[in-house]
Image 1 (cartoon, rainbow, N blue to C red):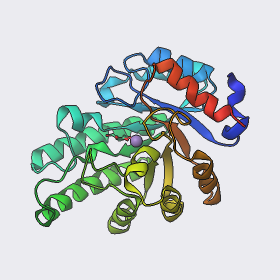
Image 2: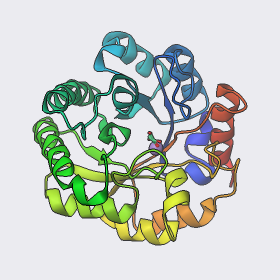
Image 3: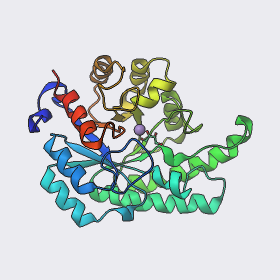
Amino acid sequence: VGRSARSSGKAAGRRVGVAISPRPVAFGPLLFAGDLNRGLRLAGELGFDVVELSLRAAADIDRSALKRLLNESGLSVSALATAQACLFDSLCLSSDQAPVREATVKHLQAEIELAAELGSAIIFGGIRGRLDGEAAGQAGQRAAALDAMARCAHHAAGMGVEILIEPINRYETNFINTTDEAIALLNELKLPGLRILLDTFHMNIEEVSITDAIRRAGSHLGYVHLVDSNRRAPGQGHLPFDSILGVLDEIGFAGPLVAEVMPLPDDETAARHTAEFWSAA
Ligand code: LER
Ligand code: MN
């Protein structure tokens, strides 16, 4: 599979890519963790258009080195993913402690500034964290988290950066599991520059119908994590990607389609499987 993967097969007319982590990470579905050089070079060689970068902090990135690598590989950064700060540094939007929420907002503002510099979006998925206790007692914590999100959204809107709200399955969070909950959040916040990211791995766990949920997201949908049922590259599990891609075309989706997949059996093979999926007629 060469650069022609970009313009042929299922990839024709689409912006496709892989998610990678510039630093080593225990969180699974990221490729080339700790080897940005190799990841960008191979992603470019395999004909991808974009890469998503999962960061623990904006300081993970040497900006001039990254820009040189992007230039050389013909790639752009579709989005910065932010969950690592909540997973590993307890910086979560839903923290019940005001100073921690404050630190999380500051942390995200720095990542929003980096996203503006790279022309990318920013993902609010795992960074939401979890709501504590029984559902009835969660309203205050949820309201504080929404307030923190709104502050980020104002900063992002001022810099022309889109925030992508990603529903995540119940085993990782209880704070937005489904497409309908993400749509409700957008309707509640009514802020500019917020859209939805749908991840087919999470959808396979949470949605009644993946295709109906995509239809309901409609023009709110800004980005897709294309991942198979087992969190491997598309085509390596049993999700019905023909109908998923069909419904994305039906709603006129034109955003990035990024494989956020486990490095199985290894990073390079997972990236190659993704490229092969796209080059298949
Ligand atoms: C991130 O995109 C994701 O899918 C989550 O599982 C992260 O916690
Ligand atoms: Mn995802």
